[in-house]
Length: 72
Image 1 (cartoon, rainbow, N blue to C red):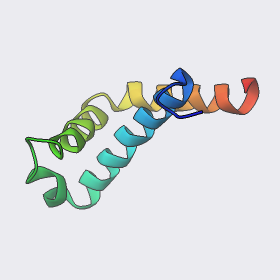
Image 2: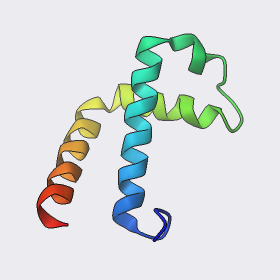
Image 3: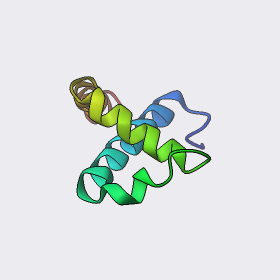
Image 4: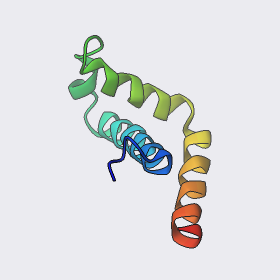
């Protein structure tokens, strides 16, 4: 089944996207900062979410890991 049709998989993909974009922006900010609009602007927005809401994203990642490891 595709990740788009399974809600748990969709949440996992979104969390991984946010974490990956925030990590890439911390390593090389020029890559994401030059694309603030358009389709590539989505990655910049995900990086901003990962930076500003990092405690909530971290708790969500830990919660998702627990659900995947023990309840799936």
